[in-house]
Image 1 (cartoon, rainbow, N blue to C red):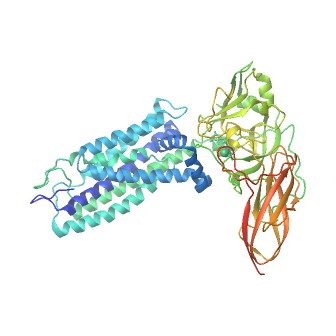
Image 2: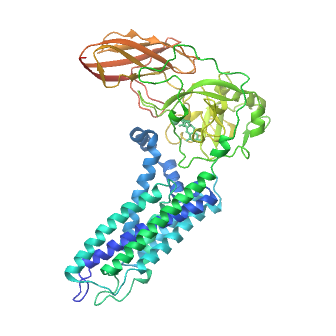
Image 3: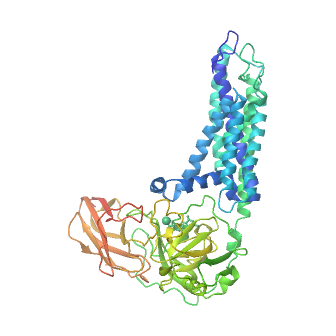
Length: 580
Ligand SMILES: Nc1nc2c(c(=O)[nH]1)N[C@H]1C(S)=C(S)[C@@H](COP(=O)(O)O)O[C@H]1N2
Ligand SMILES: [Mo]
């Protein structure tokens, strides 16, 4: 900001002008986000630029990064991505806004670049059509308008000099900081908030400021406004941000109204012809309250969907096609007429670390996948069943496993309720013994018979194994850190999916393995709870657990990371035992 000619505004003013530009940039970005949210209500929430750009990031991110994100943020990885994106874009918007007071080129460049990114991202999302460009274009228009409006309020002829300019610059800085802190948060609270529009705005506003007569200066700078103009400007910026927040929230609210939650609430599940086994006694909650059956609201959620697909059962169809003798298309009504079975099945994520909680056990109601495949008649060589979700995600399951008689289900119910929307409403697949990423397709709309040689499902080119049998594991849930000396109940879960756990052993301080009590479970397809009465003495102790499956195989001690096909190793916890 070298603006010091003999009569030019001092440097402080230049910096001040840049700060005003930054404020305008962030506020205008917020306006873009708000407008995009409203337009996305009409087109669909996945077309909103932040969701579209975020979706591209999720799809392109290297496996190691996804891994790290899940390790750090767990099931909050999506929130982290959105908040991070909003912050980055707020910074970019401030930067473009600050530069835009110097040259129109930055405004034009920023607008073109970020608008193009939003449009490109939206148009390349699975299921997109030309209309998906509209929210991004609306974001650009909204941001340009707001930026233009705000920067017009910066009077080019009200140059303040000397000491006064310094205080104005400082005021601008603090005002800027305040506004910037509000702007990204406002639309950010609406997760679909558009980030793309964000960098566009402030940029544009400088249009009619650029080249305005700055006394003695180069004539390229906006001056910092006098206190009166400053108040007007900040008020306007505040109104723009408030308006953006209202638009963003209204958009979210309308989208929720258009969501399938109400349709879901109206669904009545059919009765199973083959109900789930009655739970045996002895499945009381563990000392830490952990239960054999995981409540829907406690069930882990992992998927690539930044905006949960809203699939209306009335328009839902499932197409079974590819290398089959007979193609089948099922409607929701047709699916409901088929005999339903109900089973407890434990679902695990391949990203579950040793001792991790990306695993849950639920009672699923659904149609056996085997029957549908038998009707379609897979052709020779069709060794892979590719399931495709409404948002384009795919997983590949061995045809053989789906037909070997295990309870692989096309599920519509979870613990007595229609599938929660984020767990796949209206229909998902659940396959005992396989990690979710190769089997548990949510929002399923398509089943294609193909071969492993011919098609790689979503996670395979991203470095994960094409086959994903769940590895035998055991976990200590309590105690995790502290205990009081005396008899302490060590408890947890263990699983050897579709094979069954026959023994769980605990070792204290590297001592001998001692058998724990194995609580009953309803089948080999669920985890089982175990407990071990430990005579705990004061001091620091190490507890370790291992399971043995029905085939006699002892859970391996060898530590393996989650990628490419699931973690192994013995779960170990250090416990600080204090005297009673
Ligand atoms: N459509 C879709 N289905 C999906 C996924 C996804 O990203 N998209 N993720 C899979 C993975 S990796 C897992 S572990 C399970 C998790 O199911 P849940 O979220 O119901 O626990 O869903 C699977 N089904
Ligand atoms: Mo997963």
